[in-house]
Image (tube, rainbow, N blue to C red; front, side, top):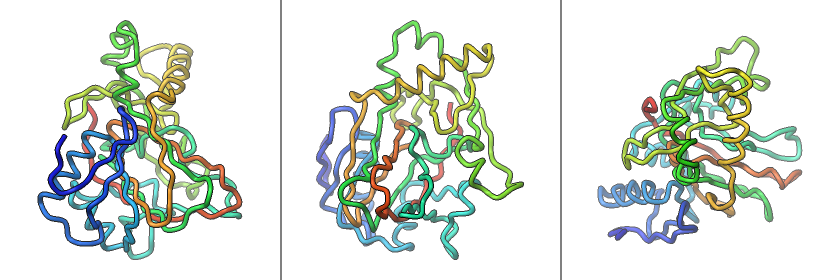
Length: 271
């Protein structure tokens, strides 16, 4: 793929690319936005270095791609005065970190976010990488019989799995039903759409069968050949497509600090 306004260096054949030649803190041209959209479609997760985003530039960047998704479950971690932005932080006092299990962000929402843009200003050295896995590759890696079996099934995605123990008592958390195999609205490709972070059961089959099937699929999405791994440096950005990949944040840096902010982009109902 030829890009007119950016430089794209793929990390693996399946997923991931580092982007250079663009300053995300400054206004983007229509050509730059088009190239970034194409790079995201081509590589599922794209990464940037040396981008000193403030809150306003972070929101402006997200709005180029479809508006901002404000997830109900993130209310306790929103930045005061900037409800669109969620704080992502871990340090010596943390007893857990969000996102260690493979997941697609907020798949519990009725219309999950199209993508997420995470900016980290403070990172450990070494450690603190994020791993991304292509759900196109995960779907393609299934046998024909398994694809046939999964086609038409839906899964229940429940925010209680990820947020039930850390949100205020009485807070209403979303629960949604989505297809196990979803079609990407831009590329038309099929992707596996169940994740350990939120999916609690496969609907319409016996409970024990659902549990066994999910156990297999949760293991399958983490196969190393579907992955890329991003090593953070201060003021880096990761921008990923929740419709076509999952990610896992590796907590191997305790008691050091990893800190920044995330904005999520409006999506639509999976089909």
